[in-house]
Length: 102
Image (cartoon, rainbow, N blue to C red; front, side, top):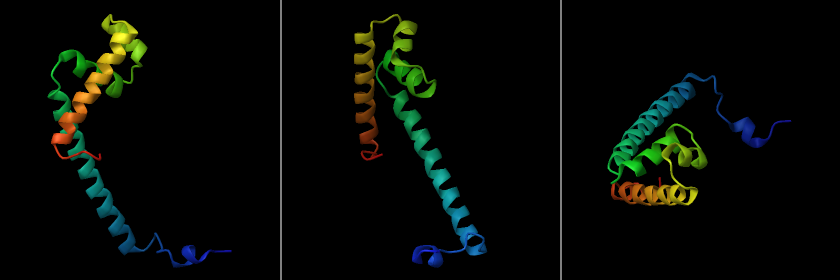
């Protein structure tokens, strides 16, 4: 049995629906690419090489903080603080670009 919502939903095979969804997907993809470039620019503005490195290793290369601590020759406490400080600085930079909620 179909619910009222299912009966009233547009047919996904309808050409107009396909065109609308394709346009939305392209717009979303472009928005995502723009945000990625802005994020990379914000990361490049982080004040220290160590902070930029921890962001890159953790979020782009997928290393855990213990792995990063070993790789960078730092204690876990120093690594956690470095990560925290890097995120705080990145948040400030990101906020100045008008992305407080993203």
